Length: 100
Length: 100
DNA sequence: AATGCTTACGGGTCACGTAATGATT
DNA sequence: AATCATTACGTGACCCGTAAGCATT
Image (cartoon, rainbow over all chains, first blue to last red; front, side, top):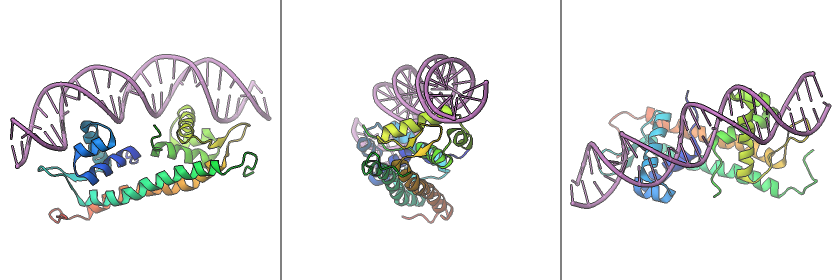
């Protein structure tokens, strides 16, 4: 019932958290504001946590949002590293020198 | 054109890589074999890397697959940790003690 | 013939963009 | 009135399960 956070959601959140502005974040991500707004809501629902205060004009991070921003960078980096690691291993493999 | 690996794909791959058997991995994931098989193919296409040798009867890891399995665990853990970190920060926040 | 991965096919969900709405300055 | 996030609405892509296909033992 509580499935894991997806990379796309986290990427979107990081963009908003860094820009503190949905419009600029959407532009940076190459999407429109509405899907970005919805993705953040979905992530908040998934985690059952409020990540952003957008009461007034300004968008600000909640403590939970601040924590997710910091750990989020690490997590996204780890995902990217895993992918690169596989690609490097493939590149460094001389066809015929298999692990077996 | 080369978008990032998703958590679902990596989770599926780890299951197959650990079981070395699509049927058991699918059962463990609570899905059918076909979507699992397709997800692995999609991941291989995305990374442009062959992760599994399923020529003969047995399923075996390629060097790239082996690398992804090891780094993959770390990455999935980092994603889960980021989520928990946000939830913990929210829980530890007394309503009224905001960062501002 | 049995086992096991893959391809074919149909359906439901999800993510997106455009347009309209609401709220704040 | 202007700015900016959200909700409404329709469409295309994606993911899944069932069924059929194909290869190996």
